Image (cartoon, rainbow, N blue to C red; front, side, top):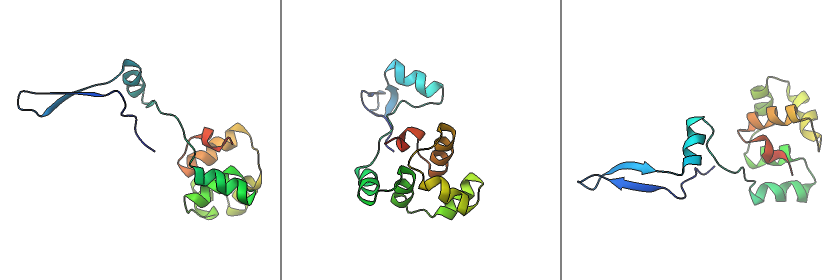
Length: 113
């Protein structure tokens, strides 16, 4: 994912080297709390996979990221068959979406489509 770099002003020292970066205060607060301000986006290819193949968002993301069910299952600490059952569902609990998203390396909101 892209980092948020809009509205950044670079202040240079007398030699012309970057010395400071001035960012909006809301971005500073988000960085200070360890939560960078950014919107979770969903690549068009992921949505197309889900719609064209009539598959779950989790499966579309997994295929997009070129991961196997076994890899995701291992990251989640479950068996491949258990993950396959979770992935096959079109909807799931919030806690399940969060676990799947973490294993995929995405935000849980990116599974909500």
